[in-house]
Length: 379
Image (tube, rainbow, N blue to C red; front, side, top):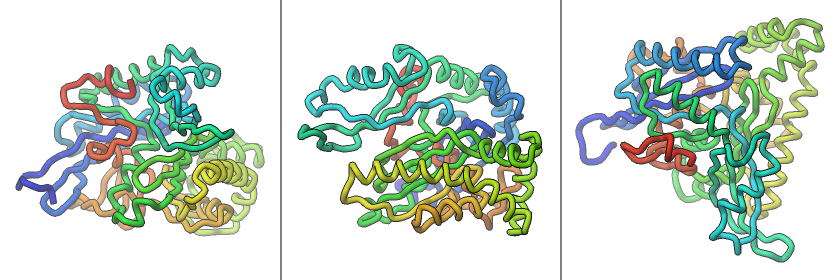
């Protein structure tokens, strides 16, 4: 229950600026808990996905249309940058440099970014103190994005009629989405592996309770799976995508699907090998912390067989995450293009997490009311 009031409190609109789709969602707090106010999504046409200018125009127009057709309240919004537009890494710096961390982080990124570090918006947060070579070090979680792209996404959102009050990254929004489900105690110290399988990338996020301990973007996702099918069958990638999506929707475990997954075995092994490397890095830093479970999110996580194949290789208990757990649905029982309330909705984790990100902001996603996002978010 929201304390001290008898009226509903609507939270900001979460805007998930994905690589293959755009999603907006808004949550409100009511006397009985959390409820969905509105949600909507639109797929980004394939011909726009490699054209930044076209994407910005498409997103601006699409956001405007979605806001007009949905039950949204207000225009305050929290955005997430697409995983493909963010650079994420872990770095270690001597603890003695704690008063000069900004300079130390920039020096670490100078040769790793594909653009000048002076053109980047950079944020970092402390993961913990570790020891290396007999010296105490600080483990930092670092994110960078091109300032021009950040400005372009903000501008597109403003043109759509939104007031941007915060910018976050997908990894933080995912953790925020599920943090409210922690019971405290042992849950706060538990280690959860989130695997967000998107169209362009797969994000690996390791969280200690509500805090991110590790994150990485892998340059392989649904498009790479489609390319694997296209190469094996010698067909255009668009046709391969249609074949894979049709089987995903049917979920029949047919002989044809068995053949498809034999084709994809190498790609799935590639993804799993990269995830395993991330897990080993985490274990080398946090020797007393063991991963307890895997939660799959993202658009590709609707394919339960794909998730199962990865989980078996990792040898960890796993589930498909449902960001709508504990959130009341609209009376009509569906949203976002007719989603089924009886099925998990892993693709909506980022949008829901962004709307909820006013309380726990591990990456400082939300800024104070009235402060311009251009100057404060991810600055």
